[in-house]
Amino acid sequence: MRIPALCIAGTHSGCGKTTVSLGIMSALVRRGLRVQAFKVGPDFIDPGHHRRITGRDSHNLDGWIMDRRQNDEIFSRSIRNADAAIVEGVMGLFDGFAGDDESGSTAQMANWLDLPVILVIDARSMARSAAAVALGFLSFDRNLSIQGVIFNRVGSKGHAQILSDAMVSINNLPVFGYLPREKGLEMPSRHLGLVTDEDLRAKDDHAERLAHWIESNLDLKGFLAIPGGKSGEPETPALLPKPDIRIGIARDEAFCFYYPENLRLLREAGAELIPFSPLRSRHLPQGIEGLILGGGYPELHCRALSENHDLLNAIREFGMSGRPVYAECGGFMFLMKEIQDLNGQTFPMVGIFPMRAKMEHRLKVLGYREITTLKESVLGPKGTRVRGHEFHYSHMQNIEPDLKCIYCMTDRKAVAHGKEGLTRKNVLGSYVHLHWGSNPEVAGNFVYCCRNTGKAHTA
Image 1: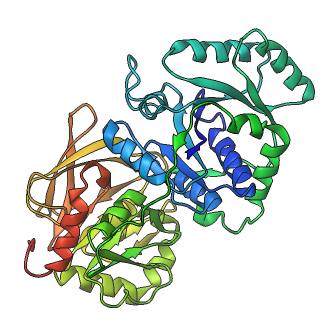
Image 2: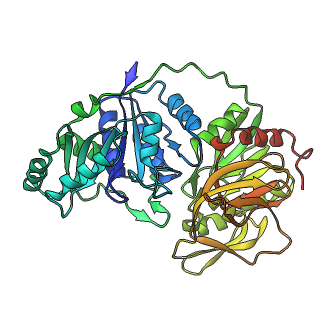
Image 3: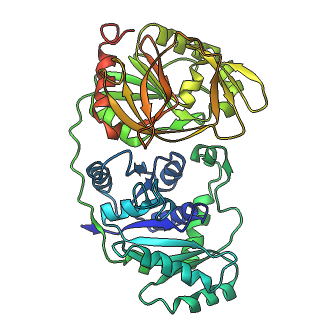
């Protein structure tokens, strides 16, 4: 069975493609369709909102972190048992990490996956010029299948008519919708990007309002009839091994940045993932042999985390006992001695790593990273390579010189980019978010290390 599979792209960052994508997903879900969402790029926050709307994990697709085959495998696997697939792009359609080709862009991913593209154009302060923008995108890459346009932030019915008249001059490029500006629909932002889905779940009517906005102003029937589509064959039940190892995973408002592919690979390797909340749980889950602390917003919850003394002690004891702990970005900050928030107030944390994470008002680091391990670790043998990205507003202070850094880290241009990957016993912490789809053996290595706690990889 072939299902509609479409890429929602924008002319630039901030044109409203996330809101439009969520609205389309909401409208399709309200029609009873099983919608599989994807996000181009390494972002965590948009996929969280996709999941809130669709009830299914949204998967990241990235042309630098993973090769074409790996992206295609994730896409093909994920659309099984779906009725429609929506891929939300990143930045502008042709924006990647190069000026002379499509590397890392939404256009590259649409070409790799052979997806029709719908272009979202922010129509604010534009009239006939909007048609020139559409024509420029249409003609820039003739190999790309741009199948239509959605005008966003349209000011009035008269504005919509001017846009419609202008588009008559562009043959065979339909306009599927003229979406009016509407207060309260767009996602609020803060540092690191949009507010996460965990913090918006209280607004139960948001999905309904998005769906109504789309259904009232967009030709959904024509949208779903766009030529193309992908095979959504029924999923054969995965023959996963019976879980033989329990791994605790921090999941709440403070720790919510996880790639679903990483978690799938862990389960495939034989792990049962046991969620707990560093904000609310007083104890670690019983019977766990490993611990994963993902990224998120611990700096917004410093007091609650710091006052959860029993859990802080339990995590410290767990890590110092030699059992495997893997922590990224916010999880890494949580393992430090303390976090200093934006108001300058300092809060004690787990204390496995004896330094402070100090929050800043400006972004400290942003970019793709490739790490190569300099010694055996919970990720695998010396020389293990994994790709991911960094994005944080904090930096480390009071670093002790004898702490071991085991990452040789480079950026996307293969330029060395500082020391990373701090270890203490079998605890590994880093600011880098690693996508294990770039090296699927990592999940198996971590599970193996958990199975052999106290026998291998002890520093």
